[in-house]
Image (cartoon, rainbow, N blue to C red; front, side, top):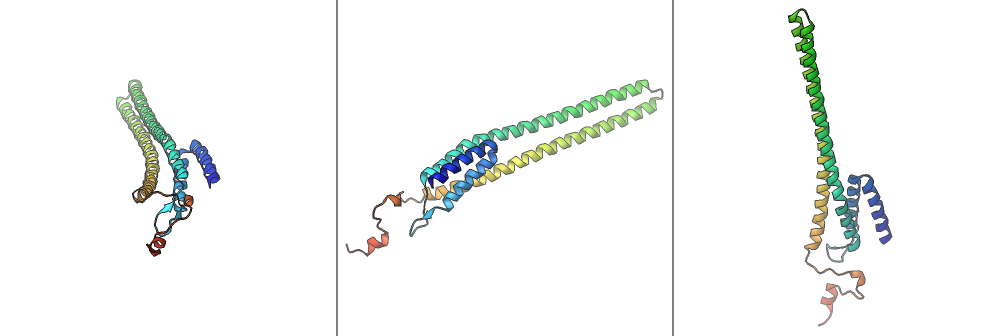
Length: 195
């Protein structure tokens, strides 16, 4: 069991470095598996869990969370940069279109035609600028929605793990490692013996 835990820890550490989200999910899955596969205590709903193994997984979670926070900051920075670039491009298009419209007005002999053409160019430029802004906003929203979903999943799994740990902690019964007891006395055995 200890060898498997060490291998899992090494694999989880490597995965966390490559893909932080996958690493966190693997650690949470390992923690859930540890709890689900723990042997039940006789005549009790409590289970035996290897403390070192559970604490090792909790430590791995603590180590991986700053990576997730950094990733969130990177996603937000990328979204802000993309949005700023899209707005800058849109403004450049509008400015260029207005300059071109002014040129046309100055060069055209028929003022009415020049103004009409300039208005069309400005309208097209503003339409394209609006499309660029909308695309940038949709891209940023999609990235933020993905990140929100990742965080929601992670939060749900962390809460579930903490709830399971809290149930064991709040059980109130003293923690005894049954594999270290030489001759365990079960409650019904003690009750059946004469005083």
